[in-house]
Each structure stands twice: as C-alpha cells, then as structure tokens.
Length: 344
Image 1 (cartoon, rainbow, N blue to C red):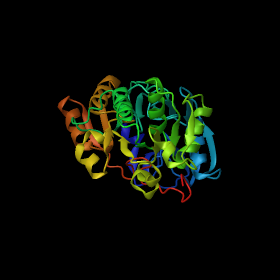
Image 2: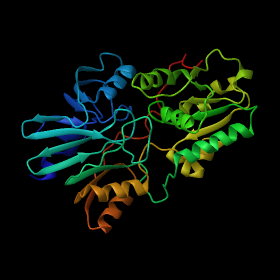
Image 3: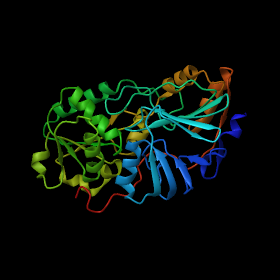
Image 4: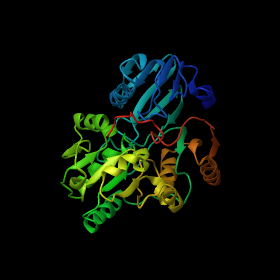
C-alpha cells in the first residue's frame, strides 16, 4: 500500500481515510487523534478524541468537560486496530503526555511525530525512536542556525543574573504547558530551592504536573504579594504577560524569555527581552537531522516550520522528501488570550 493511501494532508489536517480519523485536526472532525495538549494541535469541538490521559486532562483543563462528545485514553505502547489500520502511541519528549503516532497498514509504517525533542527533560517521558518507512517531522527550528545547546547552561545564566541583581525581580516568559514546568525543574536541578512565583494563568497546568508526580518544589502565586517582597525572586509568566501592565507589580524587572527563538538576537530585541534564554521544547537542527537518519525511513514528510531547508537536506542525503504544507500550527499558546483576572 502506498503511504498516501494511509495518510494524506487535507484542509482539516492529516487524514487517515482507511481508519476514519484525523491527526491533530485544525477544524472539528468526527474522530480526532491528538499528539499533545498545545492549543495549535489540540482543539475543542471534535466528536471523539483519542489521546494519552495527560493530553485529555490538559484539554479538559483548558476547554472544559465538554471539549468533545466522547474521549478515549491510550497508553504508550498500546495498540489499537481500526480495520486494516494499526495505531500505536510512542513518547515524543515534547511535553507531559506528548506522543508520536505510528500508523501501520500491511507492511507500511508511517510515524506522525507531532512536536518532539530529543533533549533531556525531567518533566516528561523521553523521546522514543520509532523505526518506520515514512517519518512525518516538524520543522519548527529547521534551519542550521538553530542549535539550542544545553538548557542547564541557560538556567545558570538566569541564576547568575539573580545573584548579580538581588534588588530586581526576574520575570521569565514561558509557555504555560511544558516550558514553564521544565524551567522550574531545571532550576531545582541547579540547586535553586527558593520559592518560584507564578502568574495566575500558570497555576492549573503547573499543579496538574505536580499531581502526575513531577516535583517542582515550593510554588507561590504572585497575586497579593507586595512589590518589595518580589525583589530577588523568579516569576514564570505567559510570554504575552511580560509586555503587559501586569509587570508594574515587580521591582525593576529583568525580562527573560525561554524559547528556541532566542537564538535569533533580533527576535529578543523585538520582544524587549533583556535576558534571552535558549530553552526549547522542539528538536533543533541537529536533533531533527539525527532523528530523521535514525528512523531509517526512506521517505520524509515535513510540516509546520522551516520546511524547505529540511526537505533540501533530506534530498541531499538521498531520501525522498516533500513538504506537507499543513496550516494552522505555530508557536503554541503564545497568542492565547488570558482571562482578565489571571495573575492580577
């Protein structure tokens, strides 16, 4: 069977017609299979949703109990059959509960990776390499300039700044699902045992991580804390909040942003970031290319990101490659509206 007879791009997203489902659909469909809980991949309004328990829980936290007509949880390594189609979930290493989805029919296996990273992360199950015939890879950081380096070293930069400016508050912009919790865990691994403060929009997701056994140390909400008491502290907030009047509650804040995009200095300047921290939950150029080679796939489909550069690299290695040109995916949660009273 040809790969395109198993999965193919449609306006609603990646569709498995023999199985009657879509993977990470961008519009409501009858049967959705979701790789992870970021809002550009996990949308409300589907009929049935199949995902890991953590992803289902995250969707419920964000969209309410009625985000889908029905849901089904699947574990890593568990196999589901739909006619001639076999489907299995494997860890993607992106955020808590994130999964790659292996779709097989007869002798052909296609792995839809969703978003993934091969770097260590104490807050989620590590990425699992899945041999396949066709590998569908993201390309968020699909340019050679994007080499993220060691996240622990970036956290050391943050801690050095806290020591250097004890009278200033450090305000770290980070996506509320995955990035914020990873930064906190890295701070703890680096020996930082002081309370970490959170914007109100971070609380539900972060407490959920704790309920799943992720140790994050003492956490406090910023709301109600006097300005002077925030000197020398670290606060995590959604990226949009770091440019908001909300920041006035902090004494002379040092604005940081934890993102792979901070490798590009122009991006940091554009956002008014004083302390850029190159910490990404996506694979960098080396991670993408190493993963593609290691899967053993002879055909590579590239989606959401710098597709052309990665396609060119693949063809230079003798691999069949093409962009999928799927739309609707981007920086997770960056532009999500915050409730008016969150963190106030």
